[in-house]
Length: 103
Image 1: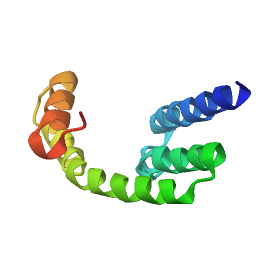
Image 2 (image 1 turned 120 degrees about the vertical axis):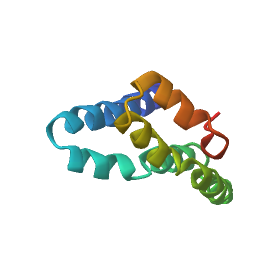
Image 3 (image 1 turned 45 degrees about the horizontal axis):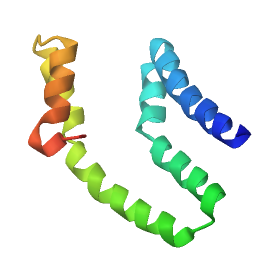
Image 4 (image 1 turned 180 degrees about the vertical axis):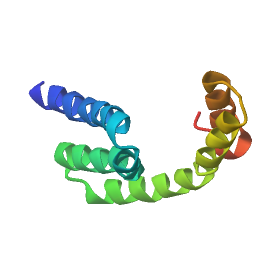
Protein backbone atom coordinates (compact mmCIF):
# COMPACT_ATOMS: atom_id res chain seq x y z
CA UNK A 1 0.00 0.00 0.00
CA UNK A 2 2.84 2.41 0.82
CA UNK A 3 4.31 1.73 -2.62
CA UNK A 4 1.08 2.94 -4.26
CA UNK A 5 0.98 6.05 -2.06
CA UNK A 6 4.61 6.78 -2.98
CA UNK A 7 3.75 6.48 -6.70
CA UNK A 8 0.89 8.96 -6.33
CA UNK A 9 2.99 11.36 -4.27
CA UNK A 10 6.00 11.44 -6.60
CA UNK A 11 3.87 11.61 -9.75
CA UNK A 12 1.65 14.40 -8.43
CA UNK A 13 4.66 16.22 -7.00
CA UNK A 14 6.30 16.48 -10.41
CA UNK A 15 3.14 17.91 -11.97
CA UNK A 16 2.79 20.48 -9.18
CA UNK A 17 6.50 21.35 -9.42
CA UNK A 18 6.28 22.04 -13.16
CA UNK A 19 3.21 24.25 -12.75
CA UNK A 20 4.85 26.20 -9.91
CA UNK A 21 8.22 26.55 -11.65
CA UNK A 22 6.42 27.89 -14.75
CA UNK A 23 5.26 30.89 -12.73
CA UNK A 24 8.87 31.83 -11.94
CA UNK A 25 11.00 30.55 -14.83
CA UNK A 26 9.24 29.49 -18.02
CA UNK A 27 12.45 28.24 -19.66
CA UNK A 28 13.29 25.91 -16.77
CA UNK A 29 9.71 24.67 -16.55
CA UNK A 30 9.55 24.08 -20.31
CA UNK A 31 12.76 22.09 -20.16
CA UNK A 32 11.50 20.02 -17.23
CA UNK A 33 8.10 19.56 -18.85
CA UNK A 34 9.65 18.44 -22.14
CA UNK A 35 11.41 15.55 -20.45
CA UNK A 36 9.47 12.32 -20.80
CA UNK A 37 8.92 12.25 -17.04
CA UNK A 38 5.66 10.33 -17.18
CA UNK A 39 7.29 7.67 -19.34
CA UNK A 40 10.37 7.53 -17.13
CA UNK A 41 8.27 7.20 -13.99
CA UNK A 42 6.11 4.53 -15.65
CA UNK A 43 9.24 2.58 -16.59
CA UNK A 44 10.58 2.79 -13.04
CA UNK A 45 7.26 1.87 -11.42
CA UNK A 46 6.75 -0.98 -13.90
CA UNK A 47 10.26 -2.31 -13.30
CA UNK A 48 9.89 -2.13 -9.52
CA UNK A 49 6.52 -3.89 -9.75
CA UNK A 50 7.40 -6.60 -12.29
CA UNK A 51 11.16 -6.72 -13.01
CA UNK A 52 10.00 -7.57 -16.56
CA UNK A 53 12.42 -5.81 -18.91
CA UNK A 54 10.77 -7.30 -22.01
CA UNK A 55 7.47 -5.68 -20.99
CA UNK A 56 9.24 -2.35 -20.45
CA UNK A 57 10.92 -2.63 -23.86
CA UNK A 58 7.54 -3.25 -25.55
CA UNK A 59 5.99 -0.39 -23.61
CA UNK A 60 8.82 2.01 -24.55
CA UNK A 61 8.54 1.12 -28.23
CA UNK A 62 4.76 1.49 -28.17
CA UNK A 63 5.08 4.86 -26.45
CA UNK A 64 7.41 6.06 -29.22
CA UNK A 65 4.75 5.45 -31.87
CA UNK A 66 2.12 7.34 -29.88
CA UNK A 67 4.37 10.36 -29.23
CA UNK A 68 4.94 11.16 -32.91
CA UNK A 69 1.31 11.99 -33.80
CA UNK A 70 0.88 14.15 -30.69
CA UNK A 71 3.79 16.50 -31.47
CA UNK A 72 1.76 18.87 -33.71
CA UNK A 73 -0.42 19.66 -30.68
CA UNK A 74 2.49 21.67 -29.26
CA UNK A 75 2.42 23.87 -32.36
CA UNK A 76 -1.36 24.07 -32.84
CA UNK A 77 -2.15 25.08 -29.24
CA UNK A 78 0.17 28.11 -29.07
CA UNK A 79 -0.88 29.20 -32.56
CA UNK A 80 -4.54 29.18 -31.57
CA UNK A 81 -3.89 31.01 -28.30
CA UNK A 82 -1.79 33.67 -30.03
CA UNK A 83 -4.57 34.22 -32.56
CA UNK A 84 -7.14 35.09 -29.91
CA UNK A 85 -8.90 31.80 -29.23
CA UNK A 86 -9.61 31.17 -25.57
CA UNK A 87 -7.81 28.46 -23.63
CA UNK A 88 -10.42 25.69 -23.31
CA UNK A 89 -11.55 25.62 -26.95
CA UNK A 90 -7.92 25.82 -28.09
CA UNK A 91 -6.90 22.95 -25.82
CA UNK A 92 -9.82 20.86 -26.96
CA UNK A 93 -9.20 21.53 -30.64
CA UNK A 94 -5.44 20.96 -30.40
CA UNK A 95 -5.81 17.71 -28.51
CA UNK A 96 -8.66 16.29 -30.58
CA UNK A 97 -7.52 17.00 -34.12
CA UNK A 98 -6.84 13.80 -36.10
CA UNK A 99 -3.06 14.12 -35.98
CA UNK A 100 -2.94 15.12 -32.32
CA UNK A 101 -5.54 12.87 -30.77
CA UNK A 102 -4.76 11.99 -27.16
CA UNK A 103 -7.93 10.03 -26.63
